[in-house]
Image 1: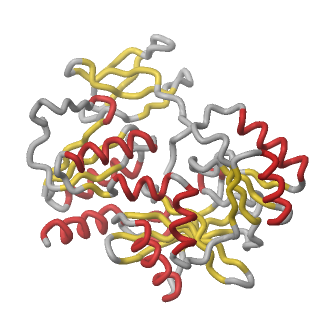
Image 2: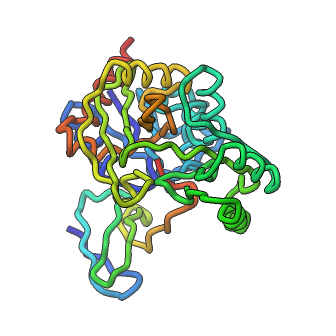
Length: 283
Length: 56
């Protein structure tokens, strides 16, 4: 198999994917996005790729290069439609909610006054998030109306493209952890707890500690249902444990990082993913 | 190994022969450098700062 890996930052995951693919006897063509261009009238230069693995850190570069490679007829993991569904939290929320996937109570508003009305209905504390973003960036806990007004003002003065869309969610009383479960192909083989006793945001980028997760049947079924709705081949799904309602799906990641998952589970995600991709393209 | 010049402090930066564009190097001077391909030769430049749309 000839595997293209499109990326803009060579993180641990991308290096590991290249090494593991080579170990499995595959050829890897690294496609560094910043060195790449495409002209519709010219023959495309990268010949013979069986599949392109999307690993750009920038959402815009990821979405754009997935769309280009799909347009050229390549199989892409993950494809641009999946990335749209994951990267825009409003779209993710609506897709999950319309398919009866349990999610935290979430609202959207398009003006400050309606956002306040919405937050009052959800109750405090609540959470305000940019509809696009990652690593817990700009995700804030709102304790009252004053705090909400302040966070909305901060959002207004960013360069966020969707800064006038306000995404407000109930604050889920989860334990000091959340769950990250990985879907690879048609399985959900591995996951972690992300534990942080000092910060309610449980992103590992913000200091949460990864611990191994034993995947129960309910969680596995939920992850695969989410995959059927969102699309894609390789997803990282974030799940809260609500003391009363059980599992609630919070977000879905279309270019997931997994260094800590590999470390604490001794599970070779890169190798597993490459083998699954190989099975898929041979079908 | 390839020895290159840090664009910030002018000091030496050593890069593996098989380094790929996009690799990040923390230089002794504190600069975060990115390997890139300069007309077929490895070179380093200041790494791009984290963007608003970066992440998983």
